[in-house]
Image (cartoon, rainbow over all chains, first blue to last red; front, side, top):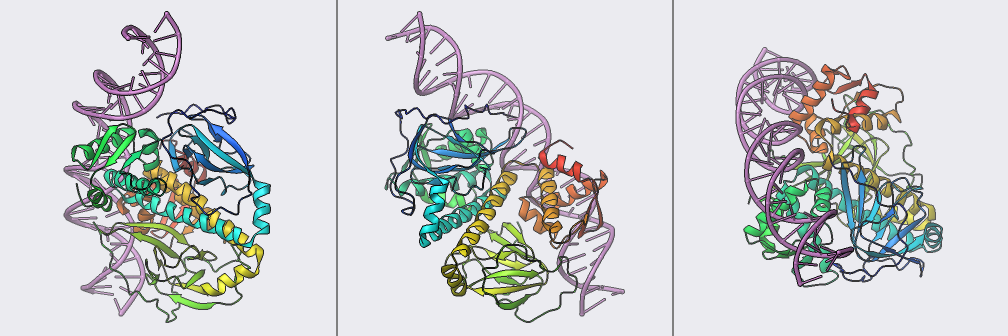
Length: 239
Length: 239
DNA sequence: CGCTATGTTGACCCGCGTCAATGACCGTGG
DNA sequence: CCACGGTCATTGACGCGGGTCAACATAGCG
């Protein structure tokens, strides 16, 4: 069983220039015009923690660049990656008084922080602000439910195929047309998100490559050659 | 692979008297005082569908008595039970214009329906109504996330133990003190909720019985004899 | 009473986890 | 520029947890 050394708990405030930026800069993705106009800028380095399970929830954050993963960890070190957050995504708005999971930068990332009192004020003022936040929560809930179907009932190959397609659609909104996915996360991150092991993820990806369905020019770059076959695999048409 | 014959799609409006009522009558569980005062009463018989995936979302519902399961079904018949809903619970409030899963009565059930236009009106009027609905959505989201950890990373025994403890806590709020859980759902329902098979659920329950941790006086009744040992199993202390 | 739905139990097997060895890549310092 | 060490990915061998299949038990229910 793996255990994960907790990286330094305090966020690295020191600014860094991201060397390689696998994800494009933010577009105004989610409807969050209701947020307070200006928040404090935060820079995180590779694997830095933004907050940890149990921390007092002081702020919520919007990703500007890079990528963040949200993880839950069991007592014995088993890890589950609840979700990956990309530029434009809002994170931590669903916490009560305390965060119930840990957030870490997958790669160097820039965020904007919105103190919760400020957010609550904005919610109290604008009637449709609450509505938009509710809609966001409901979208997250729907996504969580289809992830439960994936974890509960899909084979390894179906999970991988579903993940790749979903990731492509997400990135397509930002940088449309690209058939090549620039992966920010490692095989282990993907495995912990899909309820698999990193070996299984690697095997499935290379099996897809051998079948000519995807290409792997670089470990972190996945090129989808035959989306329709991937779609068939995601629905369970065998091999 | 099992396939599930779709029961008659239209809800059985004909009233029935529930013969055995495994769940107690509703208490004012969730804070939903903001709901319109009176909604239409609905009675469902065993396995009747309340609504199906793809139906136009006209209403949301509150369970008065009985139990309802919410399921997602894959093209080839694989099934996942997203959640079970007990008296006091609100169902269908998270739908967009159309339901994205099917709701069926586990046992005979009574519900109250609230037409969505009526609900939207209540939301527009009261400022804290929206806040309470948001809180409800966020509680559901948190529950979904811990279910993902269960599905992605827990062994069969850990899933069963976690499920039993969670179910007991839920029922305890309504009928406190009881060490015996009156199960409304079958082994298949439980299996489809935990990402297992009905045989595995049966084996694990009987293994717990052999170890003296629970008793099974009747297939639908589970008596928790040693909650602390169950709690240990849920966290992963082996056997 | 028999019919049907549900639950139990055993035998077998396979998909994926586990363990281990090797390879590719990258930043760092000599 | 290259040697070195660390991280990540790949690949193979092997085993096990839980899925699959099948037989039988039990319990409501007409």
